Structure formats: C-alpha cells, structure tokens
Length: 299
Image (tube, rainbow, N blue to C red):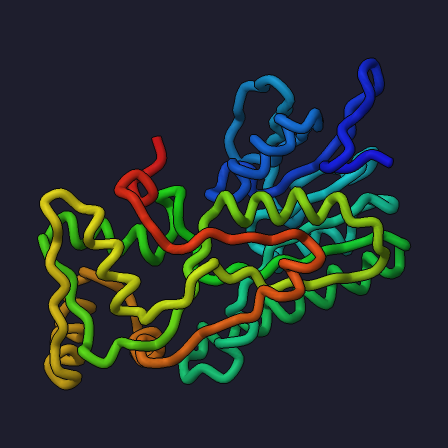
C-alpha cells in the first residue's frame, strides 16, 4: 500500500498528490511533509511558479479552472472547502483518497446574529456534505479536518493580526471579561494530521475536530501573544462599556473589522474534543507557547 506512512520502495514510482491551497499557511507545511516522505506533489497556484524538487506547480483557480484530478493517489485541499467541494463534485478523480480542511466555525457560526457568519457556516456544511456524497459515490475514502484558531505561519487573520496591531501601537485592548476558552492550534500539527490521514485505510467519510493542545482563556491567550513582542506590548483590560465604545471607534477608523458577533464571542467558550483525532490519527498537538517568529509575516 502507498501511503504517507509507507513511502515507496527504492526504484518504485513515487505516489502522486494533487494539493489545493499549497501556498497557504497550512498547505506550505503539508507540501514539505509530503516531499520529505517521497511524494510527488502537483500544487495548484493562481500565479505561475517554477517547479522545485518534488513539486510541480499547476496554474489555475478553483472551482472552474483547476484542471483534471485523474492519475493521483491522493487529493488534498488546504484552502476554501466550498470551492474545493464544487471542483471535486465535477472532476474525474477515481478513488483517490481525499483529505480536506474545513473549520470548527461550522459548529459555532450557524446561529450567529451576523449574516456573513451564518453564510460561512452554511457553506462549510454544504461543502462537507458535497465532499462526502461524491467520495461515497466513487468508493473513495475522504477525511475532513476542522481546525480551531490557527497560528504559527504569520499569515492567519487572528493571532498574527493581534500581534501586528500590538507591535505597531504598543498595546492591545480587551474587555475584562474576555475569558471565553480557546484552543489555538499550530500549523505544523495540522499538517501532520493531514499526512497521517493519508495513511488510514478505512473507506467512506471521517471528520475530526482539531483543537490545539492547551485550553486557555482568550485574554490569557492574547497575553502570551503580546509577550512575544519586543518591546513587550501591554494588554489593556477595559470595562465592558468602555471597550465597546473603543471597539466602535476603532472599527470606524479602519483599525479592525471585527463586528459585534466576533466581539461577543470573546466571552464564550469555544472548546472542541480531540479524542477521536488522538485515537485514529495519533494527533498530539502542542501547548500554546508562541514565539515572535510564529507571527512574523511570511517571506
């Protein structure tokens, strides 16, 4: 069997993987792991890129200009699930194993007061179902991975943005009661989970929530992010009404785009169970011990 856990024998043709979102924060790490394990990767990109060892770049965009899915042992999506699911529904892929990233937002934002968040949750649900239906119809195995707050590559829109704002201003403000629990997850742990999923031999659809290895209050999480800056940025804890006023002003000035629904969740616990992933993918995410390089913009 060809898998991530069982690299090809010397002289044998390397297994081939088609990877969407290869230039993104998770995709870059997945590509590196696959190449290190002897895979030949065909990676989709909007921009023309030169080929490199183990990686052939294909120019295209999802869902309509991504080319064929034939002739691959595995197909991985590290980008938007809804776009990938539409391509997968139309493409000829045979029984290639599928690993696709979604988000735990599918659990959280379905009843949000924000229409855009409700739409996101709906697109995630529909994308999951579309991948599952088509994988079952083709007799292919599919694995869906749902991360929590992703960090580690400097290009996420959550913790890296907080680090950037704090570096520029020397402080970051939160309401005093921003004690909702979070489980930030490192990109390397997600990439390892994706590669581990390729080694499974079960058929049908499997889905895993992928939280980080530590659960902590939102304000404590942010405090650790600020501690990585030099000089160290201050965490300002404001009374609720004062923070709401400051947040509205900052939004009008274009400092941030977090709406009321996002700010309300600072007080809510968003905690997910990694037991199934630990058992079936040997998923062992690290605790949250960030360093400055984890929030530096990618070169």
